[in-house]
Length: 550
Image (cartoon, rainbow, N blue to C red; front, side, top):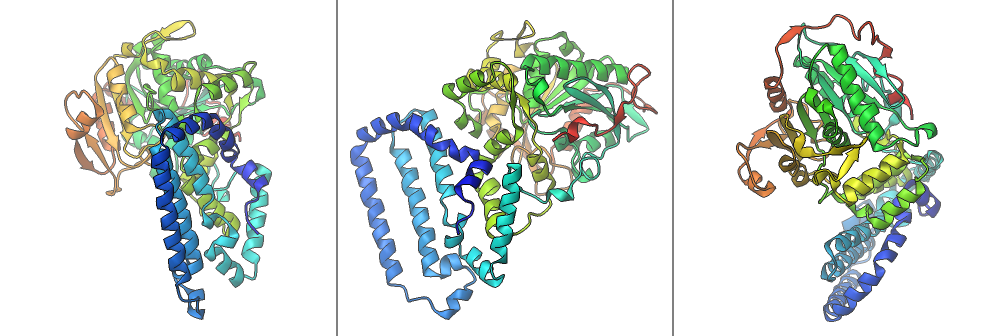
């Protein structure tokens, strides 16, 4: 029995169902390119056939399997049959990759074709099927088929809820062991709740800090378990911290647009955080698309005058190289999205989560297919993967606007090419000091694209390059000596130039950022004894209702 069947693939991995259409769109250009490269492709085919024949020759001359091979420590290499399957799959991957490399296609077409090839070869790996995975067969024999029975039950459970389980979700409850930092909701509207956190120092900086998380996922990526909480770290360093908690969009809010997120989200949060903190200005921090929204909102309104500094964590302002997610975005896809949501509607959060997971399908999809459905195991608890699965719905018009104006047409890079609520957007007008973080292995926001923000912003910019990827590079608490970051002094004409002039420091970038932030802050004052104010009283304890909506 091969697991998962086609129905499960369609339900749990919709990106695979979309691949034939994407390949079909490229097919005419692939055919023309293949015709022009016929001799080179024929030579490649001959080379692969020779390798294939040699592989079979070696396999047929191996000694027949003995009783000891059934107990092989590594059945993929020690048992000839499975070793042959593994080698044939590797040869198939090699041939398809070299085929794509030979084709003379435009860069974007070649990138998309490489992605399609990678998706299909990952999906067809022998490890993904019960009959061709020796570890699955071995466990099924050892458990008298119970592992396959359990795996089938796991599959049916995931199909019923429409998403792949990546961790033991029963181990986490938001507000109990995630998003546990004490605070209160002090303002809310239809789109956001604004959380004010309890001070953790007797004295606090007069200039508060407002965090703008991505609206695609829940805010508690910045307030995970206590040892991994960026919020708690800022509180421990004497800052008053406010957080936007975005609404998980339901049907009645499916009409909201980017302008609404700028107004009801960013501007409303700034206005009310300043009222509660009784401050004239604040520090604003945006993570991922939260940073893109923050910068575009500030560049179109007078609220920028009340922002003492801006921090952008793994955020894009220049979308020329938009990372791996760009393989999904072209004119045809954006036009379909605009048509679909022309009258409003909701983009399911699971659809976005699946698309992001597909960019690292081997680690974020097929690993769990094998473990959950073929081996019948229960995933381990992991806070980052729990958060990753806790995605949020988006309004369709906002999603379509974001794809068109940012990813496809890169309008933030061009002064006055965009308007928010009738006000033109000009990133160069953001003259407050800015701290920009890229992470070295980020496949969502390539660090060189994060660096490009430095030339768009109008004020002094401190660029720092963290290690690891999009999430782990940001959630990097002090104390882990395996982490490092890079800094450089002076002005640099390119990311390459910056990297060559940078120096590596061991540890987390958090302490470096906090010292930068303190230097931009006003004097300290006694910490407030209560949360909220008379006109903006506490509505409910943190983490609030909005973050718990699934």
